[in-house]
Image 1 (cartoon, rainbow, N blue to C red):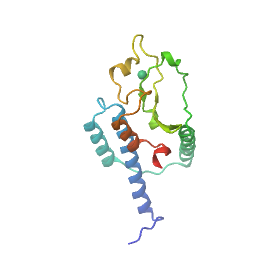
Image 2: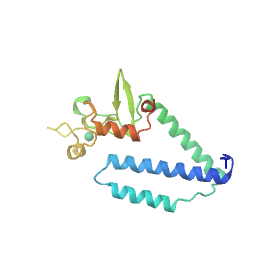
Image 3: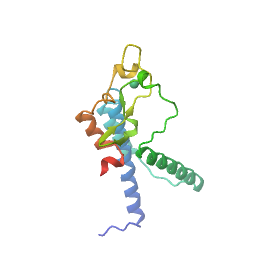
Image 4: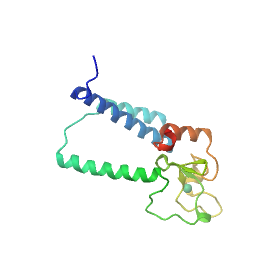
Length: 168
Ligand SMILES: [Zn+2]
């Protein structure tokens, strides 16, 4: 049987698959960022829960319109971010006062000359006498922003980042 892409059953099946893939991707990302709090076991349990309880339902035109605008805004922001600009509400502390840890930054990867820059630099002030803020002093998952990424971090970005740079 050939796949009829206008067949409602096929569309629903495809949508379900897409949504579950997206949820899995998001949960994987949370696990990468908070590996100790959001453990592999919790991640698997949540994925199974979503697969089991996921349902599609009809939306009112007004709600659908609102959602559409929201999505457009998010896509626009992502495009800007992929071009190397970051959108931050706060201005970061000056370089010498800023924590040196690398943050996931929604999987941001930008090209800086010939090198790839993974994530972003933490936006908090470092504790006096330390290079890190309170949180990164306790747990620095992605290494320092001013140093090259280790293999594990590079792999995580390759696997879970949506940055267009890594897709080429
Ligand atoms: Zn920090």
